[in-house]
Image 1 (cartoon, helix red, strand yellow):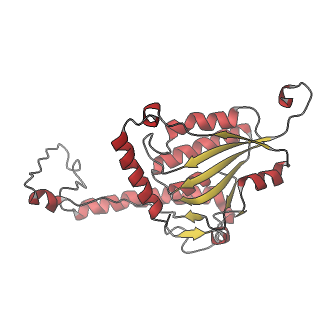
Image 2: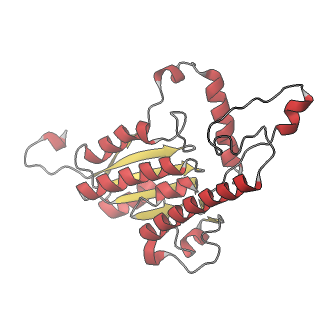
Length: 264
């Protein structure tokens, strides 16, 4: 109650935002529309001494990663509030993009960071439909409307276009990391190849600033009396009561596959 008493200085507090899971363009994972009110409340409500991001994400949508990170950075700059990221199991690919929104990044000795690259994966089903007696019928206006159709053989021209898109996204990701980490980055040939780094090695190449966990680091910075206010993403009401079961199950499998890439 002390913070409501006039002329009595309140103890500092840190707003904690948890960023857990794959980054998607739906409400099944981390996405900008769902996180926008969480981020805005955390930064604008009261006068936090800092914002701490608890990150455990294998990545996902580059656009959603960019939107979330940009929102955090923009609001923190407006309020002049420092942002700290604390990586748990993994902050890889888009997960590291989120971490790069912070002024300082801390990892556990076993945390995985990096994977600064872009991936596109799918399946080729052109032989499968023939074996089960299915005829594919596609009608388009525009020569590129059916490119990368999984029910057609791969076209070299389509693959070339896709690789061009991936390179453009990769360049954008690299620019984000360079802008945020600047001279902290080491001259390491593996840094932007999609390679991952564990614990101290992530610090050595400049992707993180130190080994540290949220509460001890924040107490060291703001005193033993610092408090913590947590702001979590809310799941849709219907999803919490078991609706969209199949959709959620598929999303869960996809997320587990994303974590599995890092042995988690």
